[in-house]
Length: 241
Ligand code: PGA
Image (cartoon, rainbow, N blue to C red):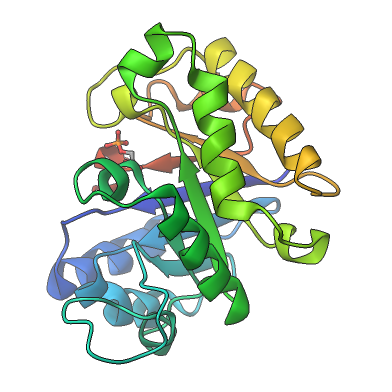
């Protein structure tokens, strides 16, 4: 049986007091389970609180939603890998579609962030995915391949083995539309080929994200290609999550 990864992206929600409340309720409701890993990506100001509140659970890891690649210095507003780590993060999202398409992050910048995280022994969760116009133009696999290459090119197999991938079609994020499980599986298969071409050995976890909720999650996870989910809106309520 493959292991599954459930990742919660809280985006710009849950300040420290609410994050603490979420964690307390979540710990009451859940127990660790064999073959299941959980990640929480709180906003930077809630990282330390969330990590501290959940640190009794070895199956739970906490990560930053974004990091900057420079180690320190005059970069107002940015969070370095060391700052995130000091607050309890053991990884970070990289290249989330909102970073790419709201804040203008480039493919090259995602590559720098992946390397900064790996250099510090942390886990990058590299997010890739096409926009609606790209899908309609038949460019999905090519766009995803370009993003994977920019993020991962030149890494050796040992470094690649520490990376998680999240396939999130941009048109499915926060829209209530999601890829059908077979559609997601097609792209996941293409991602695995790209990863092999980049030098990955063995199976890297490839998660699906975009309007995942308790009504559609089982169908997605029933696809052998889908190793877990990255969830925004539906991760904010400890009962449903
Ligand atoms: P959503 O967000 O579940 O609210 O669509 C997913 C994500 O952006 O990671």
